[in-house]
Image (tube, rainbow over all chains, first blue to last red; front, side):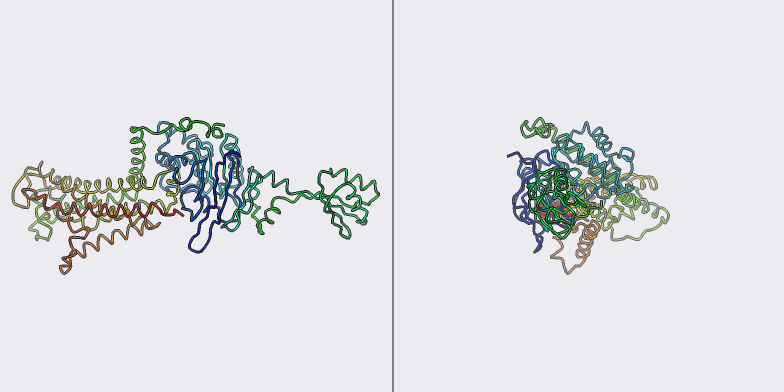
Length: 310
Length: 297
């Protein structure tokens, strides 16, 4: 079993009577870009707060980079960069001064290289020009970038990014997704929480789906995609004959409708299906291969849609 | 690459390992300096300090303009002594600001300490750096102590400068009637500042505790100010004399004991013990409260 960057067992949080997080067993493999997906209010942020030791779980426990939390927080948290529920900085300090403040708080950071590291982090998120500007004057997108820069002050083994593209314009969103890809390529594990399915599809290797405080699914994305089996759909006015051809080809789960037949394609190439139909003199008025996309898959898991517009 | 391999590498190759003692102090000093920069660099606090420094100037000018026979107030003669010796502007200003202005200043800094970071959301980022909660409280309270000493010395220094400029200086006539050199007077003034700082630090401990209860820094500041004012009010009600020794501000005015000859150190001891007790109780309470709190902002 590969070592996990984040592992939780039965992690739960109750606020009074309300159960915010219910027995979540996260398993984030090392080197993964793990999409932590769920609609707003599904318990993602509370889970992340528990992972980072900000909120105490009502029950359950977890390890980060193989170390038990919160006992070994002082040792493991410096290796983790976190963006939790939006950026937060001192409004009357500049971007660079805010980063300097966070760096000064880090016992493990080398003060000698502080200026260079801050410059590098600001450069990576494209904020160099605004480094000396007061945070108060930053736009939402710039604030988000500064929060990302703070996670890059020192090399990290794990990045926990809660909705990192919130408030960014399309260009900024692309840049951040590219940055996440680069960080992962450099070897960091990324736990990326989002309510955008498109984000998961574009950058993630693994996915965990939260719904009403529960982790309803967790798997490598490729595995989920494979599970989403494509179906061949034939439009014809001789459905019975068409169904016969499909059956002979070895397609399964054949359904017949008055003017349409569909079946699970399996390993059969679609062009072979069309050739066989034509050969059997079945008039083909339309032919399509439908692969249910991830959205349909997740809707079936959660019974709810995701915002895929952004 | 290195990150993936990290578990197999010794911890020391990823980080520079267990910090030595010298490095430990250097990193703590660095964080403390950053905190001081935050407190003293903030314009709101600079404006507050300017207001505190303005009071001795106003006192000096007012006395200068209206020079003449002054009525003897309840203040132990500092105001009436000003025209004879500018030295007393410092003491008159400290006495005048002790009731409200200095407590407000300390309440503002201590009330803001934890609640201000929580309000901005910067608290969650400090804690994930990570800054241990005990360490954060220690640094925050350290800054409150430095601030208390700074404002007290500031009022005294500005008062001294304004007084000497407008009235000149000279040997200081103490409350007991004896005369000491200006140099010794200055030494005693430093003693007064130290004693008042200790009292203000006790108030700062209360403020730090209140600051861990809320995410509204202004609320914490107002609550702490009200506690200090209430303490002064209760202290002035004779029927409550049984309560007076337990009040936070009861012993503050004992600073005048430093202006007698010989200095009545015995009279200062209860004030120092009271401040110590307040400090220990409220810092412990702050630690207990903040240590296990969920940070959900």
